[in-house]
Length: 278
Ligand SMILES: [Zn+2]
Image (cartoon, rainbow, N blue to C red; front, top):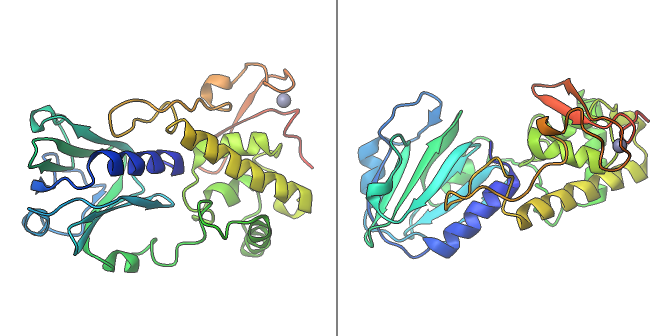
C-alpha cells in the first residue's frame, strides 16, 4: 500500500510529467473490482473530464488530488497498486481500474492491488468526503510538532490506543503512515511496537517525532519504498531496515538478531535489544 513517500513521489512526478496535458478520453477501467471505490458512473466521469487540462497534483496523508480543468478534481485514496504513465495508450496494462488518454497520445492508468478510491468531484466537494473531511494533522503539515505529538499521545491513551504501533498505524491518528514505514520509525526511535504509551517521557516523544520526520524525509528523497513503483514504473530506492528480509539478521546498530511478531493487523520487525520496553 502507498504511504506518504509513495504518494509524494507520484504527485511530484505528475506535476513534472502530466501537468498541462489535455485529456482526450477517460474511463473507469476494463476490470471490475469490488474494492475500488468509485463515486460517479463511467459516462459521467468521461463527460466531466474530456477536453480538460491536468493541474498540479498534491497530497494529504494517503490521498492524492489531481485537478482536472478549473472545475473538477480527481482523487486517489488509500490505494496500493500502480499509478503509471505510458508513452502511448497502446501500452496500457491488461487490467486497470481507471485510465486517461491525453491528446498528445500519452496515457495514465491506475490499477489497485487491494482497495482504493478513484473518485471525481466538483472542485471543493472532495473536502466533504469521509476521511478527507476532518483529517488530522499529517506529518507533512507545519503543525506536526513534538508538542502536537505529545498531545496526540495523551489523547490516544484516553481513547484506549495504548501502544506505540497503535498510535502510528491505527485509526489514522497520524494520516499517511502505515505498517511499512512505521517499522523503521519505531526502530529509529528505539521504541518497541508494543511499548505502552503511558511510559513515554518527553524525550521519548521527541525521539519518536524526530524518527517520523527523518524516516519520511529519507524515503521521500529516495522516491518511496523499493517494493512500490513510481509513476514511470520504477521501484523506489528506499530499502527498509526493518522488514521481512531483516528477520534473523543482525541489527545494524547492535548485532542482535532481528525478530518478528504479529501485532495489530500486520507483522512487526524489531531489535529486542535496541527496542527494549521502557
Ligand atoms: Zn539493535
